Image (cartoon, rainbow, N blue to C red; front, side, top):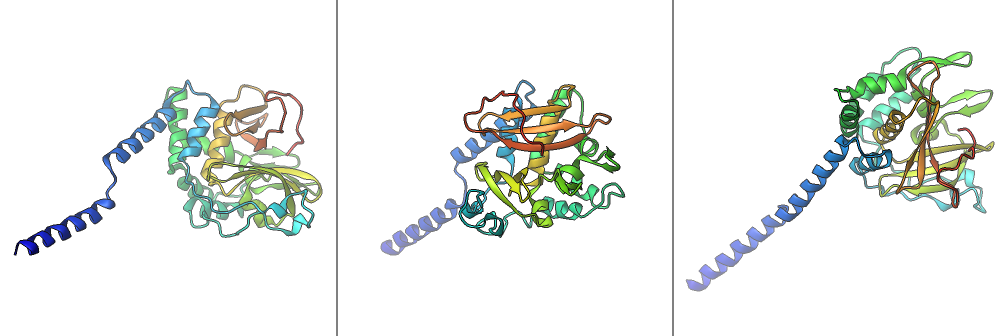
Amino acid sequence: MKAHFLLLCLLLEGMASEQLRGIPRLKDVTKRNRLEDRRRESCNDTTLDFSAVAETLIQLDVGGISLAINPKKSCSSRTDPYEEPLLVSQKSRLKDRDTVKELKKLLDEDLTKGQRHQDAFLKAIVNTEVMQCLEDYLTAKAGRNIVLRDVLDKYWFTKYPRGSTYSTGFGHVFQGEVKRRKVSGLHNWESLQKKGYRFCFKKFLELDHKGYVVETILKGNQLKTVFVETTPELEMALYTLCFSFRKSQKEHKCFLQERNFYITTFKNMQKEAIETAYPEIEFEGRERHSHRRRPRH
């Protein structure tokens, strides 16, 4: 009888241990809460520079890239790099994400004639943690309540003349435009794939399992730097954040201290809107604040 009782106690203890394995330890929960509190503080701290706020946005974004860059796609490859895929596997971890689905729909839309998918896209991205952090920061910086959706609509979807037609920041950066048989803008990976342009890469940076920054050369020698396998909300948040740091000048550069790349934005001269925005990987040995001109994207 005693032996049976001891056996029952051991069984119950084993079951309890098994159940407790799935419960987070108090230390882990406390540590996680502290990190979240620290991130929330960063979203409201107007004393931070661009690099610190941008780093918070990157850390808040969904992570877990499993796709490696294909070395055969390098412009210096001995094989034909234009025939190679950029990523070793083409199974994107982001394809089922709502914000990516809405982005793909919007890439097909003529933004100068309507906004069928624009509202759905904005609604999807402003509900992400990255964009909520950006909204908190812009609100704290302005000293009044900022509605991020209105800011995004104004910066990215305001129409303005570009040559003989009309354009928008989103149309230029995310969709890309063709002028005189040359590709203008086009700094979005989803759009680059969709349009089927042939390219090779010169260099890339990994963003701690959040995606890559890749400097590419389109066949025909056009430089296009894009974020690869990052979420559209992170891309747009980094561009918008840099644009909010601008002074009165047309061009503005924001350096990410720990990442070794810039975000460059241009303001439209007539409208309070983004004309173009893209990442730039810093050259090795280049002075951080050098004023040497890079090729226009």
